[in-house]
Length: 288
Image (cartoon, rainbow, N blue to C red; front, top):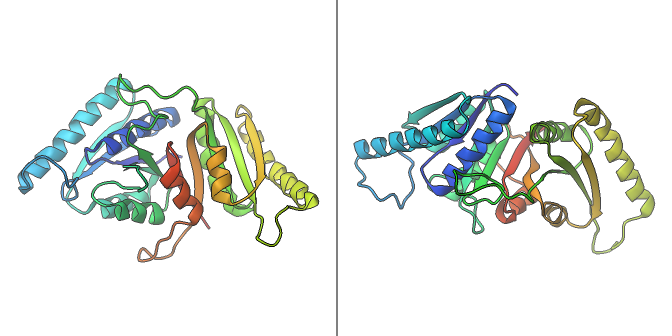
């Protein structure tokens, strides 16, 4: 990874938490950070008059205040800010082509939301050509300022794989690349489905799937020899298995298929489940 870490910052607690997570991640990976604020797309409950010049001033203050705090915590961080007039989703997606990742705030309470509406964040998460990370306000896995240290029991990066084939490569690249600088354990999760007619997985099939996972991880173990890896294969609905496996996750990584048109976007049921229910940052990684 060499591109920017782009953060959507609207001044809400969720977006500030996202900025702190992004700064830590960028410092670990030695990447530059861009804090982006759309003055035309601000929180509905913003306690200021709605004149354009006041909105722009608010945006500048949010960017400058957050940048100052982040640089105080990470003095060597390469950080820039940008105040834009285009809608937030459009601005983020325009900068995503050359970015290492996008980072968005999530309000939690059952909905993924940043800027004004949950659909904006879902739109970005479903279309971004790079990994996009959603971070909740008050996330126990994220350090924010001096008063909110990251929880010590959140010590794993978790990645859920639908397949061990080529589609898994971008997810594993992102997951290993996150775990290594953090000195974190990586938990690789595969769910083996059961149907209403067949309630038990054939043991030979399960053993073969475990062997495929082990084989798929061999080159990644060689590339990242310092990352301890746990292979976790379980039966059941994929979302349920991944949620259970993420009890100690500092980041959970899921995939989604790329789309050829910006008019069409879709997040799968597993991505929806973890975005709505996990109390930790969630990375959505596109794959072919």
